[in-house]
Length: 402
Image 1 (cartoon, rainbow, N blue to C red):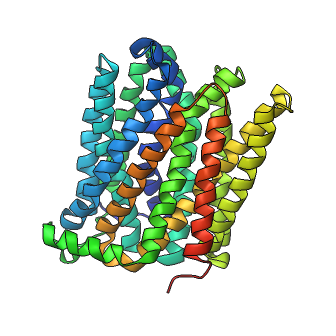
Image 2 (image 1 turned 60 degrees about the vertical axis):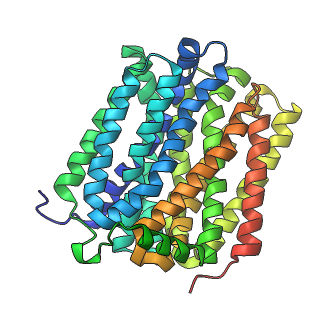
């Protein structure tokens, strides 16, 4: 039972841990992909990438329901139930004897993980709004970034002790600790008198309201494109480091370095968003990442650089791509949620679900196009960020929302 309200710092840490459920579930699997391919799909090694995207697909589907359930039954209860189901699905993954069963269990795990991921955003919106919400989200994302930094190292360490199956036991332990912290320290943020009954008519009415806001529609598409670039990168990055640059064994260390450096994106956003505004920060970020991607595509793809210089540029590009998350996603969430605080749970569900499922549809072809080099990934990300920049500049515009 909660005995006192946590400080803002502790609240941000709790939200970051809830976000981190997703990061650890994805990034912790990256070092295991070659062994999963060798064990479960030796004839089609690229199919092992689906261990990442199947989880994301399930998360996108589950996101559609998590928010409305939290609007009806409260944020805390839905997060705790979803986290419990997540642990059961992780146990199913641990015992999976084939790739098909593993992928099915990963979809279920993603469905359950949607609760902490989506409802935590609604929980932040219950307490904050506008640029202040964007600032809180930036701090949470900054802490959250630490988990991707250590997740591959954790995965590699666990694999050395008990094989890739044992990674799922670590997921259970992580989620259990997070549930305990939330349950003991965080009060419910949605009081009973503000809850909305779970009725189809009210859900349809609220969804129609969402569709009436241009900023929500454009913000959702921008989140889709941003997440697609991220998931395509996560699907291919381990193979690029191993096959193109011969650094497969040191990949967890390099990934950790990249993740830690990319934390500066969230830190920078927390410093400048109150002054520049969310839209200008997002637009400038897309422009910078697009320029870096095109430069990397030309220099790495043409072979004019030595292997070491190409690898260094690839690392710089990865830092820029991951930093883009901290400079855009919190701002885009805050922009989209600003007009709909009274239906925050449903809004978070619809926006996150559409963005996640759409991003998987865009990321899978880019990931499966992997040919041992970074060229397909860089070309795909250039298209995604180029379209995002166009929409951000010409459709969303630079002005602050009313």
